[in-house]
Image (cartoon, rainbow, N blue to C red; front, side, top):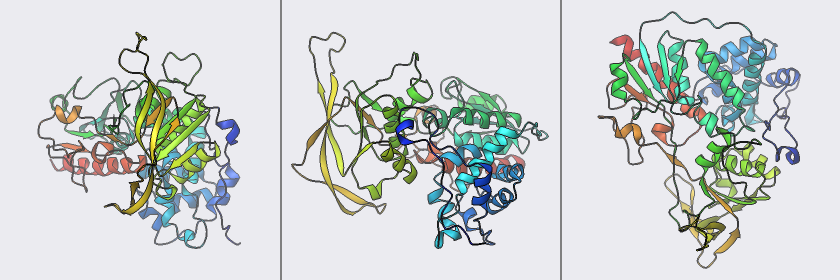
Length: 470
């Protein structure tokens, strides 16, 4: 039977409908479509797709089970390597990782590995009613700081080996960036909750509202009997450009804007969480977070939303699928533009606003692409005299984040780099402090969910070897 040259399309909400709700955009494969897509897999002996997966899922093996309709067995295969399959199937950039290595992709479109992973995870969560077997305790205790993707992965891998794992989360809900950073329409929070509950069945304990560095220190965790600590506290400290007008009312960091909407449910009618329902919004940046902020602003009632990015569409770092969804929903891309000032209106008679006014626009300057930088991307070069103003009443800065300095400032012997990222051995996640490991955005700065998971997996293996050798 000839191989279908293209992936089976993902069913999605109509753009005109979804732009006004927070329901999930992608609707997922049904059983028939999943089996048909799995049949496209060549089941290569050298398994190049596995090499492209940061957590080394046995991709051909799980797909072969989907092909025969044994979806639960497919889930078991994925779960050996991944603690968050329903999450990864939704937000992992498969197109630049496993799918980019797919042999079928040499001639045709690659197998839709991410869509099949999502289908398998969703099928399991819908149909499985059993109780997961809890491994026998090995008598060792490990503390994990942060319940984002790296922390949950590390905790899950260690719990499956019999470790007593406690996860300490600063916020009131477990999930880290999965709950405060990624919108409901891309990653429903019930999905995250299900993944967290599955880890709890393995014996993982999650303590929320615990700020390591304030409530407890790392040294105090060791005093409490924990023999190793993994730091997966993420990168929640937003960056700004340092241009005039950033203190005006109506200027947000993407972190604050998305946290108010995602974690604090400001998008729901009757919510007590304040958030600006602006009519004209500009989002500065071109990554996935910028897409999330822009599409959230649209759903909050904005009549126009602009993405301002200083390079071209080809250099845009966001996932292609997210960019396409944003374009379909009517978001405007102002490419080769760089903000130089946020313009505002000041009312000296307004006692509520004695110092700062309100945003009325953002002044941008046109750019051209010059020579490549150290990362190989062509540098944006500003064109003198090309400034103009885009009329907006809200500006959301999405130009990256840095690790929160709290942990490193309260922990002696923990080396960090100039951006505040914790310095680790790449092969193990081991830090300069004995018994302390780290991974994810706390090390690299803002990156992808799957890379954070890979770092958590690496550290879990190293912690296991460390404690077994003591």
